Length: 109
Image (tube, rainbow, N blue to C red; front, top):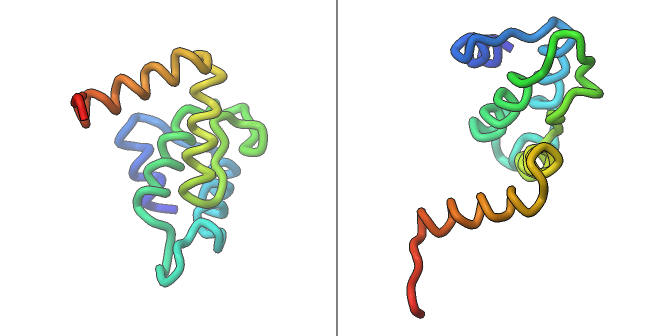
């Protein structure tokens, strides 16, 4: 709980008590914790904090978008779905492709 509060404070955001408890509950869900780990990964916590930082105080956690869901892959899916709804599927796909090419570069082979 303290980690999420600190992370959100760094971005100038706060959650309501209900929202914070919901995010922590999702992070502590056993499906969010990789096998052999004692807690959620830092990647999951970062994704959940970024998603929750966009919520409004009047929104309940269950209806807030992007959703905070247990597990890294479902969290990535929720963020991608939210981005596609906000900017459109074609734009999102093109932007992600451009970022991929920028990192990996192009080659003839």
